Length: 342
Image (cartoon, rainbow, N blue to C red):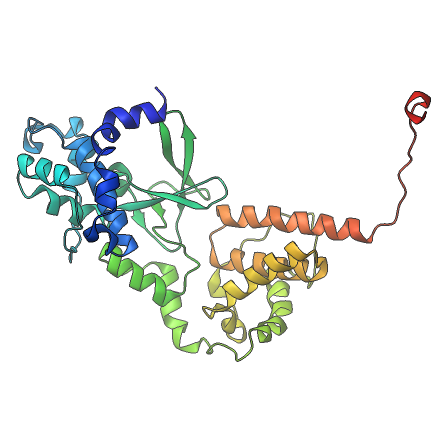
């Protein structure tokens, strides 16, 4: 069955007529974007999984027969759940008919069990509630696995893939947010969204050096003078653009104190923009230098085999090929059949 047909049968036929009016209402329009998102997600969740007042109560199910809906209600609630978002009247009625303060139970669990759905080029395209994943996988800023999404006729399918070989008994952890965010940003986001403080090995190290990270340079271009040392550290040979060896494995605790300035929150956005702009404008030497420094940062910040590292390596390869071709001087033979030349 096609995904659109499944969506229509599951929830959209009940929401289609009332959503435009609800989304134009003052309550919805005056809400921040994240509240609007929560409102739409909660509405779909209720209509798809709680629209019948005759649903079998959770307590009457065996553990092996739990549905996604049942698992969601067994997840830990947020310690400080937010107020209910605005909901369409039909959704409010369904919640009341089901009873047990359903709307509050759902919002206290869905807010800290959101998963961002990414496209194949790692662009966020949606949010989803995946109870099985929330139940099985804890967060780490130094994860042992990563969630990826495949899209087929039934919609997105989450897969959790190991980043490296793991010994038996090793916990499988995934990132709930981008590990490239600065330490304080990650901690604030995890506390506010998920209700916990991360104490993974990466966070313990970041916490130990937080006071040693220099403030933002007056001029962002001041970062450039550190990039040679960074590339030397990661790749072994400064300005090396090719190697027969595999991409090296690095860890952030190997970064020397004189390069801590590169962990400043303004550095990655600056370096990424410099690479993107130079690539777009065809300034190949600048793009290749910035791209190599950015790859070095990714290898330090992310675990090995992290998807973004591979995606950036592909973009850097395109730049290096363009740089090579722009410096070549060669002539291509041109010959056409006589009948084409007439």
